Image (cartoon, rainbow, N blue to C red; front, side):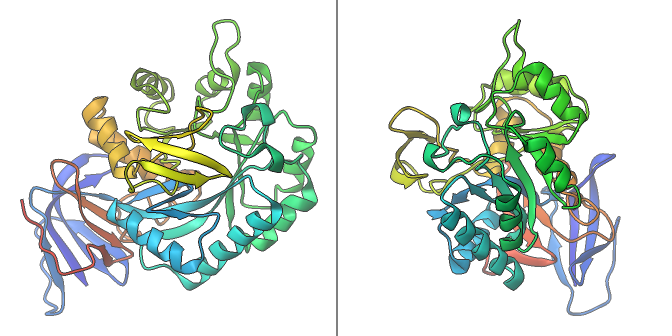
Length: 391
């Protein structure tokens, strides 16, 4: 049993209020004022002056801390999960990108095994399949030689190899045969995402009326907005029922455009992601990613041809950018990093907000928005040594 006292607890309706929060058996069992517990073995944590918020959920990330999800074995995925927990992330989708079928299946197998075993840090909530069914002209960092035409047999093979754990799948809606394949997969719990696409405005609007409910890293690797050709980006902003991802590193998307996106979509339909690669948390330098050479300088990861190769962002840094650089309310930034992704991948019944009966997935932040403690299903996983909150 664990009792967090006097923290600035984020209520999704009321905002921050000074409250106590009681945890037992991995769940939040009570939120209120001046909670008293008689059990002698209850750990009491004084969080006065600290923000107590739902743990972050990164639904689109390729790696961090020197670990590439495409190459990682279960032990390396455990290391990755602990790094993510140190940044306030309590759940994530392991993102599998365009590669050879053998390499994709290798990654899917390792992720499945890790999910079955469980990880010490942030939990894998499923798999994000980004590719290989994308438009070659908008491939971004995805290797051209491994891009495939949609094939139901290939997709079903990936689903089986994953242990039926694919939650998001990015495809280009304009590809031949994709609508028929999506209809075949209606029974699966997969959200189809429009991305890496050259589709025009009208085609995108039709896709949103049918099966597509989410847009992968808005404005990146897609048709952008022109005043006579609004493109996929324009259609996403014009469609209320569609959620969109933003990479808030202030490199992939200009801050003014991020503010425009949130004004159009409202904080209810924006999901913050990192799209991070193995370079996240590693500083400047060179590395190999997606079959190419990348240089990281001042936080930007760039191929030799000048194409951005994912990000080096962590979720807490993205939240800090939203609040301190762009002026968003902390409540809204947290919502975009916790509640909205939880809803998008259909886990909001147990994650994504602080409420009685939900999993005790919690990040505790100081006033400078540093992560001081991360609790996952009631267990403190960061820091991994005895620690007392201090101001």
